[in-house]
Image (cartoon, rainbow, N blue to C red; front, top):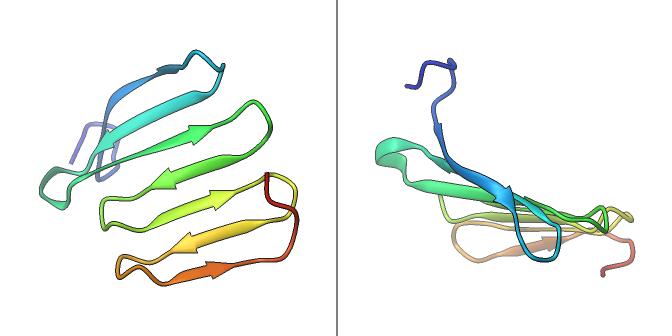
Length: 78
């Protein structure tokens, strides 16, 4: 457990060449994860359990479970 009271510690963050913000986290024995917050309003999470989540910022979202099942919402994907 980190000093911030969460079950992770931040291991990196910044902005890539496209202007998108990223942040990586270490969850200890559970693994690591990261997220992107993009300039177009979309964002993406990769979780330590292997699941991912994408939101387009325009109503479309997609969640992929650790076993690979994908669940999508309505809206426009970018």
